Image (tube, rainbow, N blue to C red; front, top):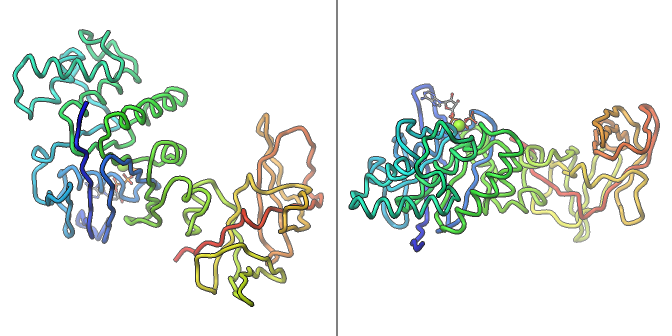
Length: 358
Ligand SMILES: Nc1ncnc2c1ncn2[C@@H]1O[C@H](COP(=O)(O)OP(=O)(O)OP(=O)(O)O)[C@@H](O)[C@H]1O
Ligand SMILES: [Mg+2]
């Protein structure tokens, strides 16, 4: 399939449903053919942004561009979008094939062309065999594939997916997410994908916008969002980082992080000196750390919870401001007793200085 993907640009979008702003000065740019994930907690405004892109909601300020074309005031049917929402809403009285053809209605194609196109789309999502079946006879994952075929049939300029897998059980969700990501990449359509599942965002997206309270906290590649977050909110929300409060200081050209009586050498920092937090992913915390772990502490085990193959451990590190809590998950082979003291630590390169939440 050939398709000229277009970029998508939102500039200074604000939305007010009547009880104060829900989204304020929201800006983002998605390169042609790339997948942007909007990741955030319930109520942070993800679906609102999709509604604005779709033209289902007029923003109180700001603009929406597809490529160079201003779409802000265009009605939804002039936007040529593919939509796939949580409830995929196939028409029960139409066969799978007719459901996909329905997506082509705005194109006003000749009957035989729209049928050929619909069959092509069914082939793309591996559902050709089901062309003449009614949706009630399909499984959840099969319905999802048909909904995707219908959304992609008119060669949309932009594809919008709003938590499309949340109604599926865990195993199927993972398979569908990999499959949909592969199809979307094959087609090369610019995509905005809404989810509150960090795994989904990390595995599918080219860029992740971490959202909170109607705005973007941080926009970066999945790898940077996970490995090199800039904000404490991102570090905690994606990957559940341990966060230690302190102060970033610069001395003789080197960065140091002060927490309580402890001073730690830091590899790099993208912040100005001042109050900050140190973020360490639980999987980077070592018990009885090897020599390459430069940050090392005596720590008291406060909690040990058993989860079958793993156990989750939580320590109190007194030398880090008297109250730093550090956790990690280890396998269940070794017995840990609450109250025992251990040496724990991590490599300085795994400790990321992040901005405190406002
Ligand atoms: N039609 C509406 N009228 C009034 N307020 C609304 C309307 N739709 C959404 N809101 C409010 O706007 C905020 C953002 O809602 P939105 O649906 O965009 O959140 P979301 O991030 O998609 O959440 P979820 O993950 O639960 O779907 C919420 O506080 C919600 O209460
Ligand atoms: Mg939503």
